[in-house]
Length: 462
Image (tube, one colour):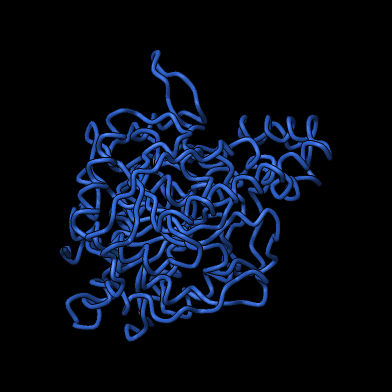
């Protein structure tokens, strides 16, 4: 699916590169269309646009490269030297990046045309994209709904037809949550699959980098470009061959799968449970996998995950605290206050004990199955202005509850991908596929099978 020369490309990245190479379209046409679309957009998906740079890079694009000339959004928690480096916070509104993230540098080497920074939640700490610095990012499927977080701007930009792909980061669901809300592919690889850095924060080892993509093959090409060991991330993994070229190579027949929409822990809307169960069974039937009747009950990890991640976030603001409190999103400021008042050696030890138990529970689960299918989010996208779990007009809005479904794979390092499963009330529902560590390739092939079995729209219809 393409577009005319005055509008952005509405197909996927792979087809756009093919169009560049055939002469059907030029990188300059796409760059100009992208800038015009961002200017006209009401999604608030970008916090910074390098308009002059985009045009100059398009003129010099090498379309023989894997991402040659492709406009790409960069999540504002990733760094581009010389661009703003705000962490989506008023506290750092004047900061300029002095280095480029490893992920972004590899994209540039592959020919990507970096458009600008996409909005995120402050320090990546919430599953919505509303900040004092940038305001609220909206969902292309419904402007009153959240795009999710923390990679909400990336998801909105891709699903909203502004750019065909964008960077994301996932420490507790920050790629998969917005992918689910916006009808996209969101792959959280095995921990270390795509290196972080420079200046990699070692603990708590839950954060991975990746992308928000329209198609499975786009996410696989992203792996081809970005995956592989880097010395500035000592826990990064060696390259595991060609990802896009090997799509569809896994024999899925006989793979054992459990369908557990709630993971035995989350409160999930009945309509979402029904859709995930139906889509999961259809996928099992289409692939010849073996459905295992298993009572999945993973432990609740939200509080322990938050405690483990707070120290890393506090390191960013400690020289400004508490004077910066008024500049921060209310939920983030309260989290810091709570952590400073309540954290102790005993609580840290209890948190580590819980994480160890959770890892054992995940390992025991994958002793019995090869794949677990669950919901990505407890419900469809909630109102855009909501910061966290609350009530709107008497109805429970499952904001904080999202992490119950996504955090387990971060804690244990398992690969997990969100793929569209259908719609409830006109909004996308994500189905999460979780696999065993290092079996990213099998998950890609399972996601591809879902794409072939149940094709999804590449961009939102409105």
